[in-house]
Length: 204
Image (tube, rainbow, N blue to C red; front, side, top):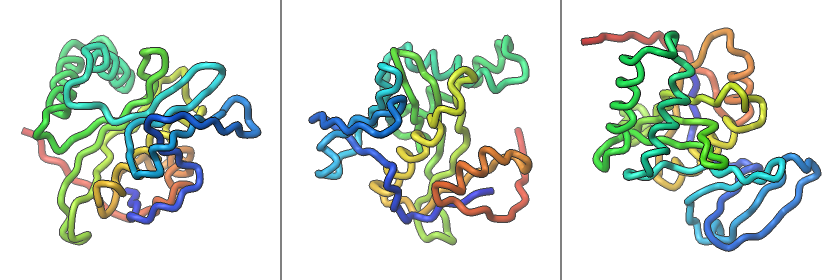
């Protein structure tokens, strides 16, 4: 299990809203587009320019366009053992609809490019006694198989961290595979630290 304490000090983060200001990095494949709205602490969408295409990372609103929900479910189906399972599809679809209800503690962050969903971060906000307030449990962080190793997961995590800071979240926790060294490196690079725990489950 990993934990992130609410200390935000990442130079790589980009906040944006309306007015465009361009900044060109040395890596032409990873040119960032900055927005001046960050000066007013407004968090809406992050835009990234890569290979001539604009990718945006944002928190999905409560009533998104239908294609957004369909593509979120289609992407998450890649994680399933049976990709053609109708039951799995229906469970995911129902879960996404519940997450996007106005009274839901769950939220979804996506990375979108040309109306295609490339990555999804699904999380819930709960109350932690040990932290003395709200915290985020990151249930899923998933990137399309064809778009991995391009920094998409990192961009979604940074958006989550920034959103959590704005919402006065006390910390972020998640679980990852014991032998998943690549994912562990990603979390460690953003300030997460590993904690020891045993997780139990009861299903109805």
